[in-house]
Amino acid sequence: MARTQGSHSDITGPRVRAAALKLFAEQGYAAVSMRQIAREVGVQAGALYNYTPDKQSLLFDIMEEHLSDLLAKVRALPLLDDPVAALERFTRFHIRYHSARPDEVFIAYMELRNLSSENFARIEAMRGAYEDILENILAAGQQAGCFAVADVKVATLAVIAMLTGVNTWFREGGRLSLDEVETIYWDMVRRAVSA
Amino acid sequence: MARTQGSHSDITGPRVRAAALKLFAEQGYAAVSMRQIAREVGVQAGALYNYTPDKQSLLFDIMEEHLSDLLAKVRALPLLDDPVAALERFTRFHIRYHSARPDEVFIAYMELRNLSSENFARIEAMRGAYEDILENILAAGQQAGCFAVADVKVATLAVIAMLTGVNTWFREGGRLSLDEVETIYWDMVRRAVSA
DNA sequence: CTTTTAAAGAAACGATTGTTCAGTTAATCC
DNA sequence: GGATTAACTGAACAATCGTTTCTTTAAAAG
Image 1: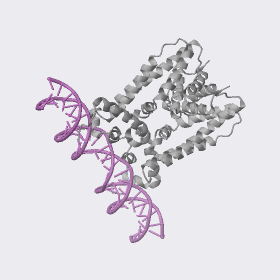
Image 2: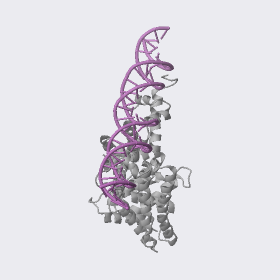
Image 3: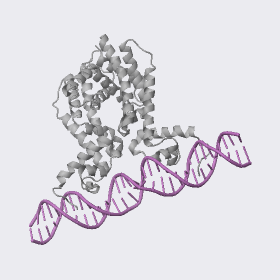
Image 4: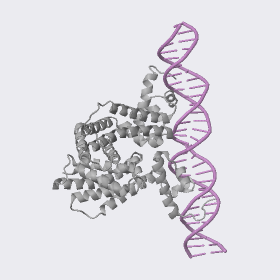
């Protein structure tokens, strides 16, 4: 047999990416074989190479798409002059965006070492650009006198680590709603950096 | 050839564990082969099985030893009645302990999914016991009125995520000393949870 | 209806995987 | 100093790896 009824590139292509996303998140890039991905899609392993040049590109594309979408969305937020308001919006945005895409987030910082050095540099640059957004908010507030942190760079990394940690435990339908979680974290972030 | 000059179980055993630790941290459990570990030790792959029943045990032993040592050290700290003092000591302990063992820390929460379900349960229980120590400090301070957090459990996870994040960027000999980093984080933690 | 082409199957490639095992050597024991 | 044993080598096992190639089929084009 070969081409099966109803088989199409524009259907299979996204399914390959979705299967890779799911399996990489579940088991890790190195532990997942191309045959496993193919089985998830319902296709033979060789057919995957109609949609990706190799396994590594599958991983890179997942990360690249995730981070470029993250950057696009955060940059699409309207500017706020008040640093406190800007920090609250960043906090809520980060939690909401990340909790909605647990697989992508997990992969994007568990599988960095499986990227080629060139691909790694591109992903790291995007991550740095995202951190810069928070750093600029904190620096502006520091200058305006509404924030008082000992070190803006360290505070940036501390806040991001704290917020990203939500993904390790938060589950929809649990004890707390996403909105409650946002409020709890915003309360802690605000007090941690406020003057 | 076979047994080489000066080869001994009590020398090779620790070297096998050290090589596994280093390589798992660098490349990830699934990406490291037994032959790579053997090469690092300077031995043939088959010889590794004098020291471990299988690859999985190598991983589990690293995690188990790390977490049981962590628990022993944190429990060895003298008790403090003041919740604020207890929280400061926990904060500084966590940063100091974790920054001194980056490989073990990295493995202990990147490779959880490569454990069998039984081994996973044992490691998770130890991690939970560690988190309970911080949670008890926060709960005591909350009751005493010196802390004011919206949710003790969430605050526990938020603080641990923030503190563990130090390992992603801190390097000895960098811009900040470990003591300075401890102080910066303690400042943020204290303000985040204080009444 | 015929031709063309996109999409998939099937099989094979050499390389590598974790693990086992028989054989070999050096240190230890009496 | 001969026997025993711990520590290791080297080869082999079937299974699986990412990837390529060739073939077959169904859909699209005319």
